[in-house]
Length: 207
Image (cartoon, rainbow, N blue to C red):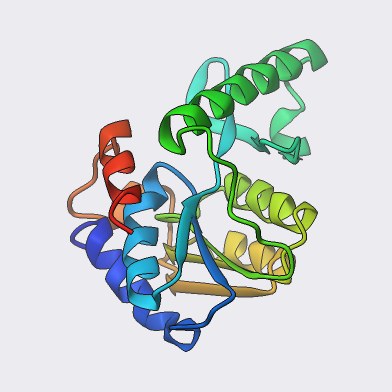
């Protein structure tokens, strides 16, 4: 459906055009997949741009899958059905490990800088796609705790069921495509690759 994340971001930006040149808009990327998409949106909207670093809570034997997500402020989303096979100790160890990874990424990607002030502001949360939706849920929870006035969850692609669930949590949902039999974000991109720390830092420095 999309050549790459840049094209997806350009299309998503047009879908969010009503927020162009609004003073109280902050675009927050969910790294690292969402950075390229969010960069194009922030550039088009002429909005503030930063990273909201949340981490999936991966299964020990299958790190590509997860049972929830965690944010810096302690915002945690746990999928009770997915996590029922893990002991409390296993879950706590994974949460601790991912919190440390959040600290590392804030230090490297944001150079230790805090999030922009989002109290009473409109926040657009952007990822390159929403599969299970754990990280987007944790991001929405974090922004609620930080006092955001309005939270818009946006992505080029999402599964229909998950999109409906995210829509109930966010104030607005903007999704370009909800394909049938959607299983993984990578399946809708012709050019799919992991975004490096260097690429992420470079994009942050452009706006």
